[in-house]
Image 1 (cartoon, rainbow, N blue to C red):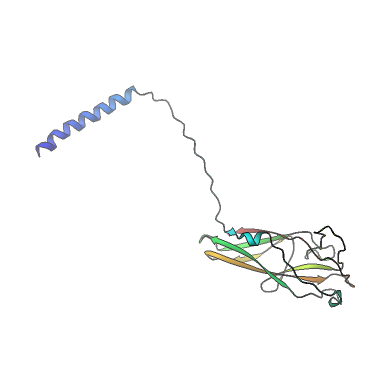
Image 2: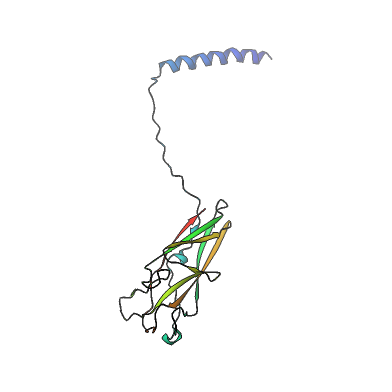
Length: 180
């Protein structure tokens, strides 16, 4: 008990010294600069999904007898990885050059520079339920769960004029993913 009584005056003396020392310090302002970024919750787009080459197939021009006839479809996926629990859905906006006859379709383009383009067909983009997705518009919302997610889509050729002439039937399609 006696040790505690001696300690209290010592602590009071030290506290007074601190106050006296503080009076001698320049009280000028100090500036602290902070930096950082607040980012939206998102998923990582799998690198294999970012630059895909999708071979829709080789089809005879003869299968397109009427405007609206289609080829078989080819599936492709957009893989979203490491999605956080804060994300409940995503929307995908597909863009590219729309077809002159049917603007909801993707026009063919000479991606190889070799010429010899097919005519009378364009590329139709479909969701996993086989509903057409118009080019240059935002698609429906897709539910997202925490972790990894696959968004499935399909491509096929669609006749826009007859007769369809054979040739190169390539194009370029871009996509942007937004999260909610």
